[in-house]
Image 1: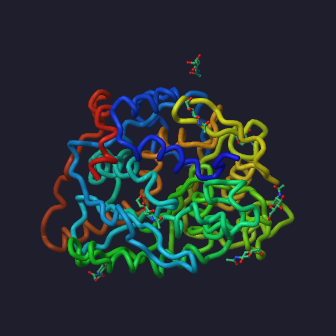
Image 2 (image 1 turned 60 degrees about the horizontal axis):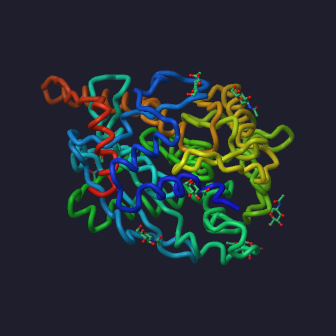
Length: 421
Ligand SMILES: *[C@@H]1O[C@H](CO)[C@@H](O)[C@H](O)[C@H]1NC(C)=O
Ligand SMILES: *[C@@H]1O[C@H](CO)[C@@H](O)[C@H](O)[C@H]1NC(C)=O
Ligand SMILES: *[C@@H]1O[C@H](CO)[C@@H](O)[C@H](O)[C@H]1NC(C)=O
Ligand SMILES: *[C@@H]1O[C@H](CO)[C@@H](O)[C@H](O)[C@H]1NC(C)=O
Ligand SMILES: *[C@@H]1O[C@H](CO)[C@@H](O)[C@H](O)[C@H]1NC(C)=O
Ligand SMILES: *[C@@H]1O[C@H](CO)[C@@H](O)[C@H](O)[C@H]1NC(C)=O
Ligand SMILES: *[C@@H]1O[C@H](CO)[C@@H](O)[C@H](O)[C@H]1NC(C)=O
């Protein structure tokens, strides 16, 4: 079986870990039939929208050589943290150039480590401090958290050995434990252990002795794909006092195989949010002050024509054998219905002619980040105006930054971001 869940790691690692050329990068987007274009769904759009059947990639995900670069810290090797028996995990932190040490700052936690960070970082470098409201982000730091222990070890813990899933996402794997268990545990771990660890890390303290990550949940977001996306949604939904925003691409909001993790409180996994006759957590709990972005597609896992994309040649890899008692598409649609009925602030992208893969992320992520961070930005802007008038200065004009690079320049440096780090 292919690595059904960890698509982003497989897909991106395949094209980014080895020495790259600009041609490789061109080929990846070309193979996927994706041309560059500005993100077409405005960052001000809420509710459901459909994209596809053809896809572009937002140029803002390509690295920006003229933007002021921040610092990537603890990127290689073990900037680790202990979680249960599995031991060390990699944590990567990105602090944008705009951050002034000591200022209160928002944070976005990424699941599955830093595989999406190059694209997110590019959008941050371009959008933070921009005068263009539709493409403007407040300053925030990224903390990318990998699952504990080398994935390859995980399957030793499952009853099926290494045969079913060579991505360490199998039965009882650490990833299933961390990302499929419907509980507050993971969010609390991140908030209570990872974030303090990061702020106190020697390498970070030497550059930012007063890194001041906010306690205000509206400035704390979680971002992930697949099971990591479901985790983002749980972090906001189950612990809104810790994380106020979720950004989830192709989250597993169905039931992958409820016997495959060790959780018994909600045996139907994320179906607990919406399945009629179940706990229906969205309907039956109070409205929480959170905002949720999620995305799914017609060929997401569990659907009859489920597939993954091979990013080398753009072909579809059949995944229709992946067992689901409910598909990701159904789980996301039903979750969206329940959220809307309850009055939540949501943004939901549904992709046509699209596998379980990164197409929607490539096309839509920069504008979605702007949507996701808009409340916190408003708060920060108001605070700044307040501070400035207290200090008797005027709020001044903000650094304007170039949004779009020309296609040629973008493509030619797109690969550099991995090597430069
Ligand atoms: C999508 O791309 C295909 C192949 O290039 C093209 O034939 C089709 O017209 C496009 N569809 C839309 C809606 O743009
Ligand atoms: C962090 O920011 C908050 C809000 O501005 C402030 O009250 C607090 O004193 C700051 N903490 C540090 C350690 O600078
Ligand atoms: C941490 O990342 C490095 C570099 O990618 C990798 O070699 C190492 O195995 C990772 N460690 C763990 C515990 O995952
Ligand atoms: C679900 O997982 C269990 C292992 O816990 C396995 O025995 C069972 O065959 C799986 N069910 C399906 C339908 O894949
Ligand atoms: C999960 O359940 C399996 C099978 O019962 C057991 O071997 C394993 O120790 C459990 N893991 C945890 C972390 O509870
Ligand atoms: C992806 O496509 C390449 C080139 O056609 C092929 O060599 C590789 O085996 C494919 N990978 C998978 C997982 O199918
Ligand atoms: C999910 O919603 C989309 C967008 O409204 C729709 O096109 C699709 O058919 C729905 N799929 C399922 C399985 O409900």
